[in-house]
Image (cartoon, rainbow, N blue to C red; front, side):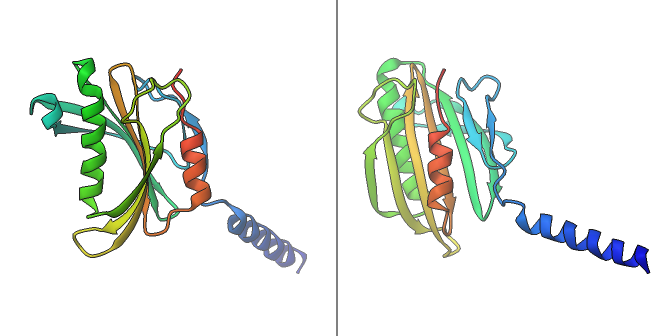
Length: 177
């Protein structure tokens, strides 16, 4: 009987620990080649996608991305190298406009961006907007567009109701050494 009680207590303790496990497991990362330090709430996967941007004379650019999902939100940092310093601003603007189009966003709110180590730029902004995906689901996105030298970055959190605290932790964890 003592063994049964011991197993019940152990099972109850494990259940309690599992219930207390946070949905977000924050970790600091310095992705190879990204030149950015970031706090992610989950282990990100690396993706690469081709972008064709008008600001870059329609030529194809490679966007490197780190993406993970936790607590019903997707966290991402993407970056693209720009060949001409005069195109950094237009590339940042195009990345922002593409994000707005992706969820058919209405009434975006913009503020100045601030990431330690970033190159000051008028197109560096923090954005908050809501919209709908093509399947009709409502989404909220918070994004940060910034640059260092000739590398343009986009950090974003998107979900039905991403936690304001998690968004702030994600953005506050960004820095460019």
